[in-house]
Amino acid sequence: MRAAPNHRGRPFSPRLRPRLRPTAALVAAGACAIGLIAGPAQADGPRPDSKTPPGTSNRQHDRALQEALQGLVGPPDGPPGAIAVLQRGKNVKVYRAGVADLDSGRPPRPDDHMRVASVAKAYSGSVALQLVDRGKLRLDDTIGKRLPALPRAWHKVTLRQLLQHTSGLPDFTEDPGLQEAVAADPRRVVDSRRLLDFVADEPLRFKPGSRYRYSNSENIAVALMAEAVTGRTYEELLRRLAYRPLGLRNTSLPRGHLLPRPYIHGYAFEPEQPPEDVTTAFSASWFWASGGVVATPNDMNAFMRAHAGGALLSKATRKQQTKWVNGSSVNPGPGRNKAGLALFQYTTRCGVVYGHTGTIPGYTQFAAATPDGKRSVAVSVNTQLSQQETPELLAKLRKVQEDFVCELFRR
Image 1 (spheres, one colour):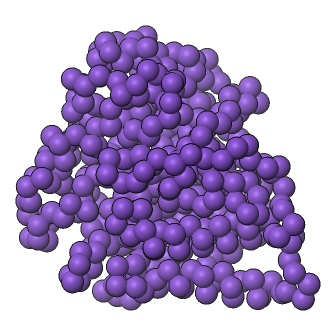
Image 2 (cartoon, helix red, strand yellow; image 1 turned 180 degrees about the horizontal axis):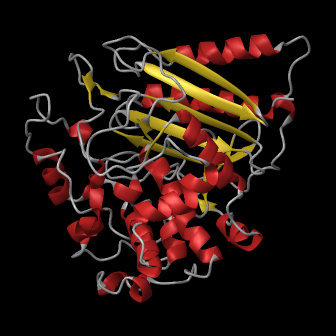
């Protein structure tokens, strides 16, 4: 991939390719090997080792979580900052370490904006599933029925398969043409509804429904289906079905490279080079429904409480959403995971939570809640971590995520 000057006049690093590392089911090219997830998750309650040991105070727990978060920041290639929003009922606690901005040195705040990366797929999935409840869509609707202009070879793929990453659609972010286009002009605003054109001449990777393989193309098709059956833009559907019902005043889907202020700056690291601020290095239109959403830690936490807790869906649709298939064992999230419809199940040492993960240049995200939606956590760091490039840091982050999940179950 040839280098091209970016907004700071430096070569556009291969780390800045649109490699969404969004879910527990990460299978993006060159990222990591697919692992087998173990059997069914345990009951949704806490396990014995999640109980508070005798004599352990809330202050000691808070100190331990704060120290764990602090331990993530500071390594030469590690995140400059980290923030976690933990909510149990109406009680909200914020933990933070390091900085949101290396220039000013200010700490990250829960009302700072950031790119949520592939947690954005939970938003597009929520829109589609609510349209299923309204009778606008059916989980067995096919691409051929709703999007007949897309390649005929994809026409048998269903909405269910798109939402569960079993469609076989080729991943547009792996296409060399897309990567070259981003490298040549990362801030360019493109027609997001044409992103699938980059792989329109490619066949399905496998028979739809026969296996699990994550593809960033799937949620582009999900958003296009939602637009096709409503006659409204995906951006408007987000406002009507997600932002307004949940009071998300600090969530948006921008088209360009700018983020609303204030924001947590995202950084990239190259060997023996100073950290590069990549917050506004690329246009969100390159990712759209697959990874373009911007939100604050507070808003991301609030959305995931509702989405993971099933608050926006009927019981029938929720039942379909939580039919699980094996995902990937190497991912940006804690424990072992399975994939539902726009939702992942994480089985940790302390219990089961539902949620989503994501990575994108400048950010690594995890947001989850207990299945009843009463307890939730959002953990964000401001650099991209991956199994391929930062395996030790990713393992450390996953442990910290699990520590916060265990805190949700603490009595």
